[in-house]
Image 1: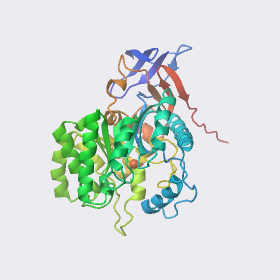
Image 2 (image 1 turned 120 degrees about the vertical axis):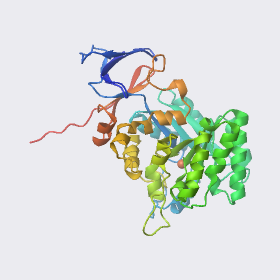
Image 3 (image 1 turned 90 degrees about the vertical axis):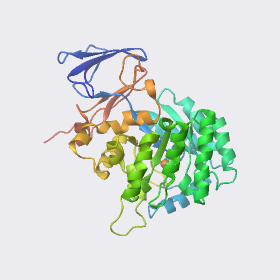
Image 4 (image 1 turned 60 degrees about the horizontal axis):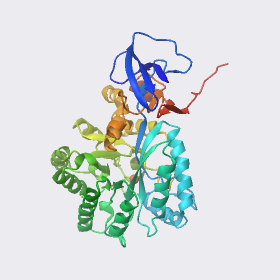
Length: 411
Ligand code: FE2
């Protein structure tokens, strides 16, 4: 199968991509538009990009909002109460069914790489065991990375350290953490040292829920970045959320950025979730409760966007469409300048792939996997402006999803 009349980001004119089974065999410029052969895909002058990436989601919690009760205030704290009620009903099969339903939603919007956090503060580790099976059973749809995520803490939860170790033995790919939630600052710091040791020992990636609070004194990011720097692990480490950075004093932040840059760590922001859950202790003026996405990006560091929740006790909306998150994030982060708009897809493609350490398993280059999307617009700006979609998703050289755009008739 070949793709003709493709526009590629960062390259002039139209291109043709030849696929040889599961690999990209050739990419060549076309002098002009051509008629597509019967078994070719015609991109019709629109963008062809590598698949969208979901770098931060909780597949073990999705599709539970309203069970048994809705979060009426919309706050994080009521969300935790509602989740405690739902968590008591979570079973292995229930987790698998909801995760697979959500994966279908992601696939329908062009996502082929997913990093999910899974709560391991459960003596049975049922959700983790379920997700390890889901990872195998959905290989034809997505590549799934599983984070061992200690929702209720490592040091503050009974047997927290042992559960993290067991989760890695059972097959989690990434070591997680939640230092700002530990009972004391000391526990937060020791949890980071523990989780970095665990990752280093086992050759795992790291992704920590870090400073997900408006408290400007929540400063675990500096601890995580310094641990990553000293161990030379920065490119394998991600700080998720870091929303306290939105409340840090500028003088402190200026010093912090020096460390962040040399540490080489990655950042994930979940703009819809954070604008919804943060700023809840403010009257007016109200903080946006997001990390400094534009500033991180402009300082040359790696930052990407994730969905975090889909229809769970913390966030009631979501349909798997990461372009919706991108549009919201660009608004919330003051990134609607034309230069930002014209490279905005970086935030859900290349930057996210770097966060997930996908390396040569990702990207439109000869010899790499034939995984790609045909989009509905010719450039990043038009994708955002028209609220475009992924129209075709190709995986391992086969069509995985086709979407027919809505049509409008008058009169
Ligand atoms: Fe999260």
